[in-house]
Amino acid sequence: MSAPDDGPIRTVAWVVEHPGPMASGPLRRVGRTVPEPGPQELLIEIAACGVCRTDLHLAEGDLLPRVARRTPGHQIVGRVLRRGAEVREYAPGDRVGVAWLAGTCGRCRYCRAGRENLCPDSRYTGWDLHGGYARYTVADARFAYRLPEGPPDEELAPLLCAGIIGYRALERAELPAGGRLGIYGYGASAHLTAQLALARGATVHVLTRAEEARQLALELGAASARDAYGAPPEPLDAAILFAPVGDLVPVALSALDRGGTLAVAGIHLSDIPGLDYQRHLFQERTLRSVTANTRADGRAYLAEAARHRPVVHVQRYTMDRADRALADLAADRVTGVAVLVSD
Figure 1 (tube, rainbow, N blue to C red):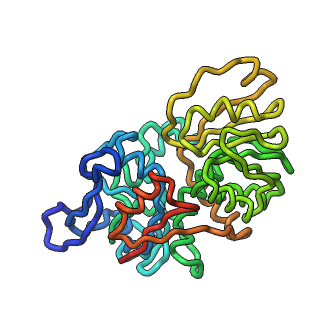
Figure 2: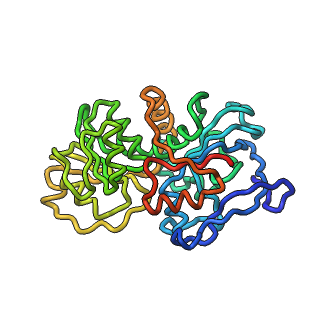
Figure 3: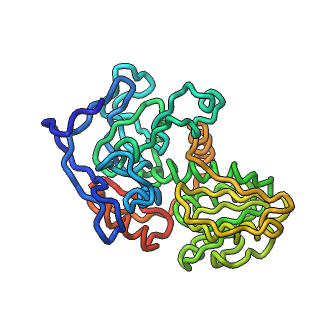
């Protein structure tokens, strides 16, 4: 259990005070007690935290808060300060990462089948538990990731959600070896997933509205980069929709070749317009969602990323400018990924 918020040891954290448009100032900095780790938890001093569109959905109210005044952030890189009495695999000073999936029951049929991302009792960092827009956080050691020394904090942080969820989306899209992949939207997760697909030998076509994002896609190896509502230069074997725009679902389905799969990677999506069966789904085209990730996904992606070393295009913000980082994300002023670094 964490210590109560009126304890003697204080720090500063951001919370979602009143969910609403970023212009309304939904985030607020507050004083909070430095938490004590429970028996299976780690107390972590945060060095960097990636800024995710899920954080924006929480701040603006698209994702309903589960607890009032929650601290967002779930792409955390830091050092262990203290460990709970039952923790054996980590020691003070270890470099660790904390991701979106924060806990599961471990007993339900989904957990037993290796599908813990579908656990009905799953909990999430920055939604159920306080996250990384802060100086300190606690996390269940069983859901933390050991991180290598060497890479900068701000380059590791985005791997912990943008990278991991992109990995799962690519797996769900079932891209064949050497296949043609379409990526709709080109933000934090997309620019890492594109590099993963390229490292596996795919041809990648990017479709996104921002000219800066299209230029970045070409610099990182995409075969083409066009407007989100345009058509790729060839039929796609698979596609991933990262933009939270339901209108793009029929657009992406229309771009698929026979037998292709579209994976929708966001936790929130605006309404999908009506689909025409013959044009969008016939000839065994598949539409599927992506829900969170498993710890096995996280370990597999981090290992693969260590081999191909993705270029992480970072916009740095100090922790005291978290509200500005989210506002820039909302206004499409972020190319690549925004990352908060310790003040």
